[in-house]
Image 1 (tube, helix red, strand yellow):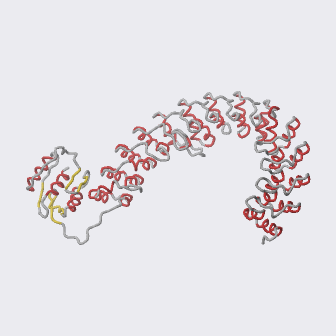
Image 2 (tube, rainbow, N blue to C red):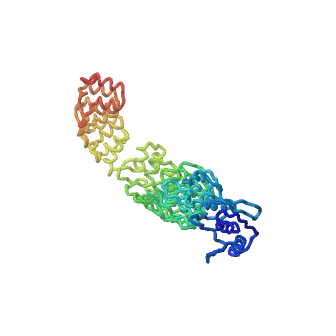
Image 3 (cartoon, rainbow, N blue to C red):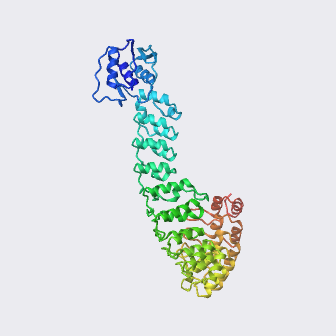
Length: 565
């Protein structure tokens, strides 16, 4: 404080006079020190009524400055230079003031503090802020000095800028996300908003439990959600999705949030709770497995239902045994049905491991429940090639086929190329003329699978292999698009047309050209397909071959298209 009052006194001395002031004023009140120095200098002072030992902001003429923790010689030199004077140190506590020598060109004011802040030049920044305090509060859309200082972890620089009146808000997010605990504390104590605007709430992006504690203690919103509707406890915000190493720091973050009152029942836009999210990630992430246990221990509902009617067990069923075991041990229903009619057992049978299937059966899951698609769990295992699951389910009494849903199942079996299953369904009375919502026939599904044997079987059972789908395409178009030569030859032998166009003008040759299938194009042209046929947008098979960048096919079509060279 002695330095401050000496600066104030020196600033009041008559311009041009060489005056000397001295004395040791340690521990004496500010007003008393000012009066003593005024007597030495021969000037009269009028002190403000609210002057106290904490007073550190001075105004001299048009110059105002904040002097807290500023060395006397630096502050005095800077403020006196504004008055056209300079300070000379004569001894430990003795100073003289004299006029500055004339300068031809005055130094231009600094307009951007950021380079000095980033370089950590604390003294230079302090001196500039005394003369230009507005630099701490620039009106700009670019990064402000306190944000630059916070991003570099420069705590003393942040402190200096705050003392100069900088807004603490811009520095909080970068400091929090960088785990600069000391800087976060400084900014929050200076009034920074713990809920700053942004694409994500700040609590979502912090990975340091110490920072989370500070934010929560200063009023961070534990009920916030991000643009995707995720809540603050969503494991996917912080956990590495594919790591078998438990991240203890991440666990500490979630423990902090729970301790501070974050809800394990909070819902995302999809209606999912943190337990849904943890169950989804837990198969590939050790931290999420720990979080699942943490959320359940905190009272989370293992039977919470999301907007699709799914429970956490639906998401866990295709994964690890221990995750399913954890949910079941905490009271999860082993046989829930979601809105699409699927149970965890059906998911596990088609995609999961055999131990999960066995556990669900042991806990009472229904082995022969039929999905709206016509699949039993046993059928799901068969269609997806899960042989271990398939044989286990058969041993436990599972049925491959459900009579009441054989037609829907026929479409799925045909699309997977399952010849034996299709044959059984047809024997049970499944309709070979069944179509899906887009009017795609069973034959077309079989063509897509590439199984000629299956196409022959359907033909032998009375399926119409010349039928058209909802777009006007026949089975030959499906074969041409995929380059299935043997199937195309069979369809042509049964009378399929090479010149039929669909609603947009596509012929089988257009499909072959678009897929770059040279041999298919040869076959179709040999059977009378036209190389000059045009789509409704004017493109020919040659145009589509060029788009596919199939050089041999381009050359072949050019040789068969008049005037194309």
